[in-house]
Length: 114
Image 1: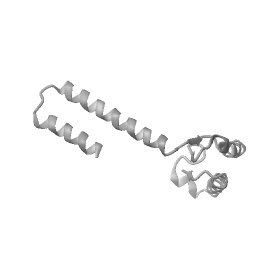
Image 2 (image 1 turned 90 degrees about the vertical axis):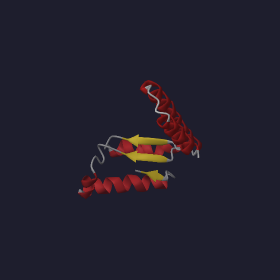
Image 3 (image 1 turned 30 degrees about the vertical axis):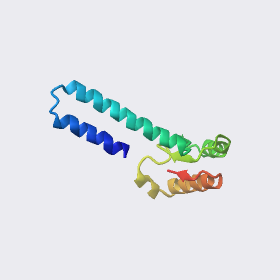
Image 4 (image 1 turned 45 degrees about the horizontal axis):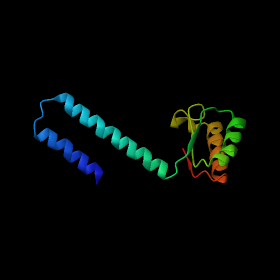
């Protein structure tokens, strides 16, 4: 409902043919940051607490996942050095590593693994 109101306000400015482009840019910027702030607030309220594992070092990744429980992490991302492109999952070693880390994360009560 709030987003609809914001869009209506922007359309009102367009309908008035406001010549001052700077005013429109400022208003748009304010609304943009207000939307981003509300999205961030919703994420915090929903309890999104995430970590990203960047290294492909299995020992460090396993230790990180096991430590995550102490910090109530519920979102884990396996990134760059583990899987940079989706096509890398075709490699059996990479696929096994991703599956192992995902199973471990789920066993440690980390619901979301990307």
